[in-house]
Image 1 (cartoon, rainbow, N blue to C red):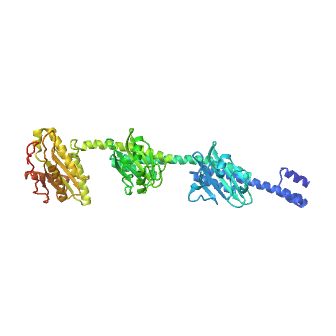
Image 2: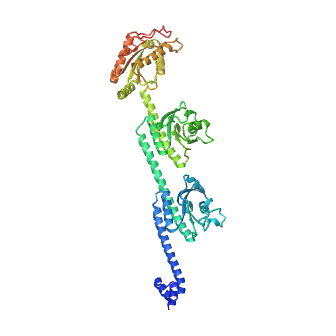
Image 3: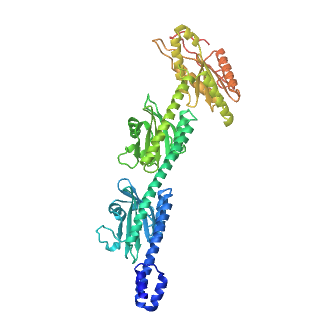
Length: 572
């Protein structure tokens, strides 16, 4: 009866295995030992399956919430370790057509080293590459691998290998590989479980990639919105360019960004901004940008140009300038508005410049927005110049002079530096107009403006105050320096006569008055009145002389000019 019960239990009938084994052990010991082993193995297999099912479910849940490929890979290897013992494991993700890039490793192969690219592989090469091409693989001992696949053991002892491709909708997502060193190799059950987890991981990786892409696009959108918001606050080309450079530098992580605009009439580039401004290579990266073949090509073809210092195809002069500046390369992006190039952005990097499609797309998108903002600022500047400038002489007008002088007085108060106001009136000009007409007189005025402009610094401001009267603002200039500047104008008038319409040369002369802040006045109006009074004092004294408030230039008339063949002598 007991033997019958044992047979019934082993054949699958319901029983209490523990009770049955005890009874049989008391009666027929030899037979019971064999039966107990079968029961133990059955229990172990059942326990293993339970653990696998739990691990697979748990892995699926954890991987599904992974926010990045690295997180998914870490969960995958953690969950595999719960059901499959391994010494080392690695996860590769598919890149491009057939590349496999390592994303994470654990165990003895964990470390990809300082340079992860050393373990990059391709479909068909190495264990990961072979699994990507052939499907799941189990090798009991890499030392005696019988399949002719070219694999070899990494240690001089039995090493079992597993590899499973991760596929989603027949698309290769990546590969997971592992090895176990020792006497017990991986079995088919290990390979089956690894295959299931690899399939789950493929879906999780795709979800993480989608999330990563969505977050990247959202971040790019935020950058564009931030830049657009900042650009909306200015219509000054230099300020707009500085905003563009700052935001592009932040978005691209580059060493330096230079923004230049293009003068359509001359074809020359003008550097507007450089970020960071303290970079030693600012403001010009390639010296004369107009002479850069890469920049000319980018503007001509309206396409992005990439210049690498170590690229044999790079112009030797450009490569030399990059190396001298301590830069590895440039990405040159044309700024195009309404179909026409209006400038260029140079994005410099210490290493070889990036050519990643996503990176270039971001740069192009930001450059497109930047081009429209810069063009609007340029159009506004042109309109403002028309409103602020005298069309005959190109000098600023009366209104702009008062605005700018107010700014300079505030700045001088803050910096405790002087600022000079120079008033200049051409001597005898009314007689020129009355004798030769207003057209001739306009030419004389334009000529005089050119001579004045040639004597000034770039920081000086010249305005046509009215008729034949001019006003100059000379920042950081005291009475002595202002008198010297006025004498340069007098010298230019004396040595370079005006010639036109086949008339003899006409020599200009001018009476000049100077006042300086704060001694000559503390407000713009006081400074202008003081300078104007000294101008007329110079006229009353005979003209062609400079008058200041502290003696510089006082009583120093210029030599009297000879009678001009162009017309009458000038009146004092």
